Length: 218
Image 1 (cartoon, helix red, strand yellow):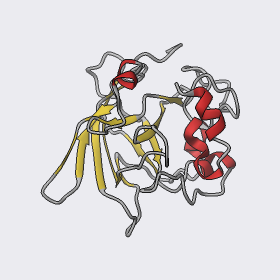
Image 2: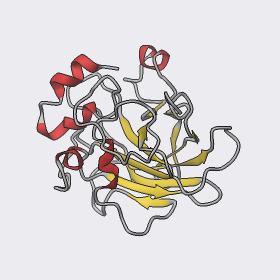
Image 3: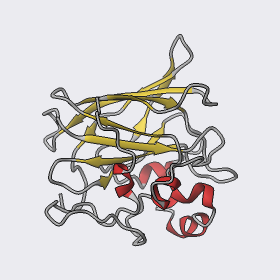
Image 4: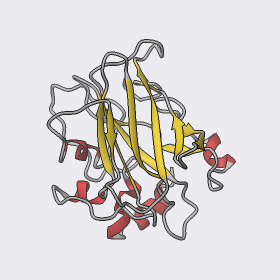
């Protein structure tokens, strides 16, 4: 999963989180309570999900602040239990992504990890129907690279340590080539999102998530 490129690229302070979700990486792995079941293998900087965590979470969030440069994006879906049918309640979905220039910019100073995630980060917690929705701007690819536009997701279930699932990527992204598509692990289900602009000019897409799907140790 791009490991060799990632190790070199992460030296750039503004885009260090290019390495966030690669299981081959063993730096700065999450430190989680021993009582939580560990799944998914190493998860670099995934524990940043709890840094800056709002006191009250709902199943919807606005990530990009007012005036943020970029094209508006809205992603929604349902998080299901492992059977792929039963909605999963009380599940936190944490996401973060680059700005419109491809940088993880202006991250908070809770830790090096949260700073690397940039300021475009947010949380949702599902209710009984398992639904979630977030509004933000469409992320840019890392500058001068062949990396796809993507949004990093982390899942936190009760009693289970946080784990990463496949990134949100966009079906119309010209950098989303056949090699990437064929190598997808489909952790949490298919991460390719078909997006279309609505009448208000907002990119809209849907992705359903299946907890534990193709997650080692689940």
